[in-house]
Image 1: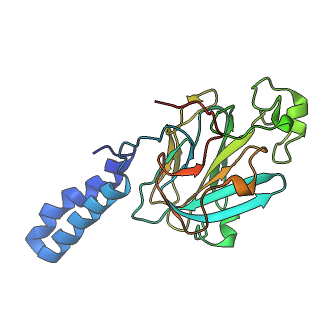
Image 2: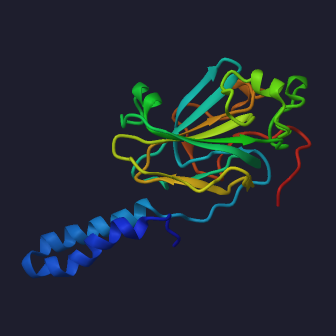
Image 3: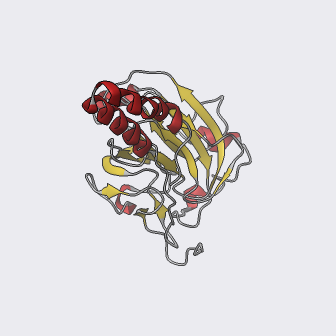
Length: 241
């Protein structure tokens, strides 16, 4: 079994304490052992195999957010303590920016969580698994054209151009966000891009050409990172083997 980075840092102390605690109390020893094993379970990182086509969920959990924001669609996946906490790329893309934003640590299922600590992984994508439209021509070409940035209401003047974004959001107990991706990285669909210690929420902000009716999941649906298709590929999309 693979584990996300930092797993042993949290698990080693209770695992080492378990045999010594047995001298004083069987219950204390069992609790320490359970805490260590449970911590490793929180950090498990199983292999995932994306289906041939389609945009895949960036996280394990249940859909908690699905809404329009201007001309964009946001999909949010809430991770509970029993879910795998490793976040994956929903489609092939180039990372243009990774930004850490300090904030609160409210429960990730609450409305106030939009102001929580978070990490934005911004991307440029021309994935064949996404819809295309005439209005999207010139977007996602990575050229840094100022006009493409100005057309995106979510972009800021000092940010590199991007047309999609994966946001890792901390929660009440999940206060450690560990991004793996860096600016300039080339991501394939299903690649690991980070993890949130002890779970929380992951949002996917789709490119402008995606509409709400294109999304194939609903609030409450169970997701598996890198495998559950949240948006079917257009007819004739390139099949990834």
